[in-house]
Length: 125
Image (cartoon, rainbow, N blue to C red; front, side, top):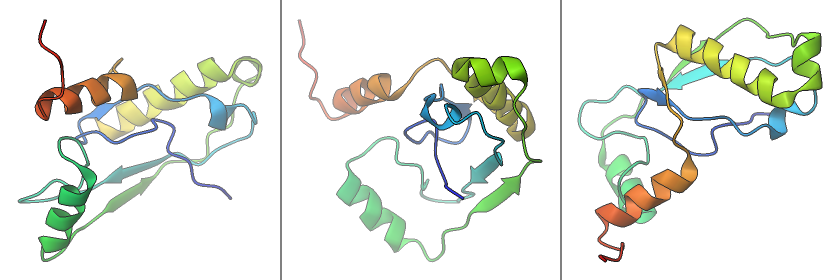
């Protein structure tokens, strides 16, 4: 068994980013899992600050929780086996439906621009 996070990054828990297709190249069945991090004060999702500050604030919370939702094993169709993008997109849609998540077309590159803007690192023209 191998654990992969096909988004390649984290979100605030409301959105599901596009999946990378590498995990789907094997054409093998997979076990979809939804991870949720319920919180009251500080979001465990690394979405708006540098890593050291994030880890510090995360460790300052009394407790951090995770909810794990295991969906039934997903068996790819013949079409999905021939095209890993179709396979990845179909699994993504399933996770979005089951997890009540919004599909987003933004990815890691856009997240990096967002972080740079928050930290004042973008050049003004």
